[in-house]
Image (cartoon, rainbow, N blue to C red):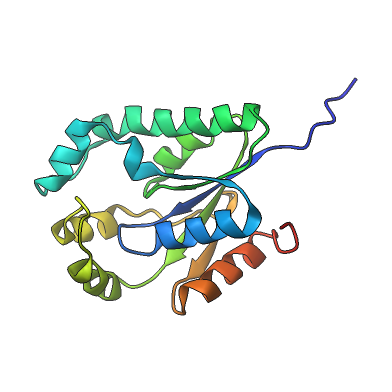
Length: 176
């Protein structure tokens, strides 16, 4: 007999620091009533210390963090919950780790120019990610491929409009 349970999904709002991942992801989660997580909260102290000191993370730093995120998505899916998660997910190989979760993992890439983000980061307080690492993030960004499950949304409007566009682009309008 086939499993009749609906497929669980996770939306990962991705992009470099300062593009609006948290605002957008929280808005989507609140609008659709989904579990939300901020990937930065899953970083081990050593990663936070590195970034706080202006040192970019390398793949060895990211691997266990990505696996923890993947496992969180799987745990929520096994519990019957769909999720929204922020994660830079800058490289395809990082997204590949997240796609190993026991859910349909979909990506929402937020698109905005580096200059605008730099202005945002200059005003941001209380975050360990320094603006000095922004260039390395934009340099490392591998945009979503046509074969990846996801969409791109331009961040050129008020947050409410970006959230509305994202929900529509992902085919989730009317799911609330």
